[in-house]
Image (tube, rainbow, N blue to C red; front, side, top):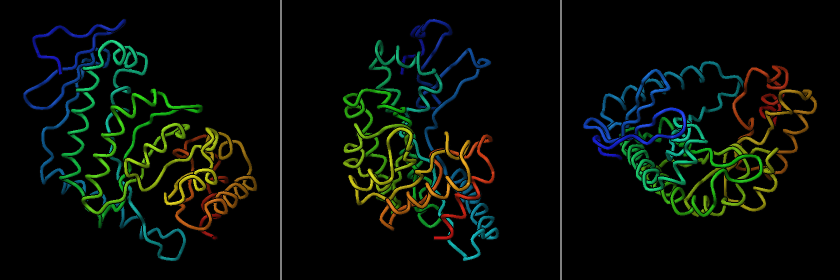
Length: 283
């Protein structure tokens, strides 16, 4: 992104260097992380794809053997596929990324485009609807009250790349489940127009209830909707069961994969997690 002879961008504490490299599209040097660097691959070869497919086949066999419902229910594997923004602000931290976005918008644009093009190459190499019929096209772009980034910036720079990523998966017979925590309503029309098939994780404490999303977007399939921040961590099994039954009813009996609003973490009560699963399996 910055020619190798150019000086690095200095932002407050450490030195961040983002540059082209002969072996990759982008090389990011972060001296604050033990002088490590990361690169975006120019190509994803057959060996990479084969190794990934073998791992997924092993996981599918393991889940099928477990058969927790006793009904031989199929396991649907969802593969993560990022637009590219999340990894950028993870690597810089959100404060420094915000300064870069304001002071070096062209750098951010080219960096995001490099990440996006790398993911499109990955899609072309690994897509396999038999193993994973759903791709999780993701970036965390919102928090509890609103998008982290301005809707105008997202529409200009991020949504077109989300659409291109969705298109790449659709061309390979794979559905696209978009993921972002937070309140997405200010940009949800844009996500739907970009071709998403489903929405995850429906963070209810951010106002993303199953019923409201189903009412506004009846054609989307929905996943999540059971609060992990408060309910699963501090509630009771009866409260969890009631929330699960309510979410299932709000989904109008179709296109809903019940689950937590983010990963089940160590503070989640085991009995609450079990109550959630058993309520879903009992429907």
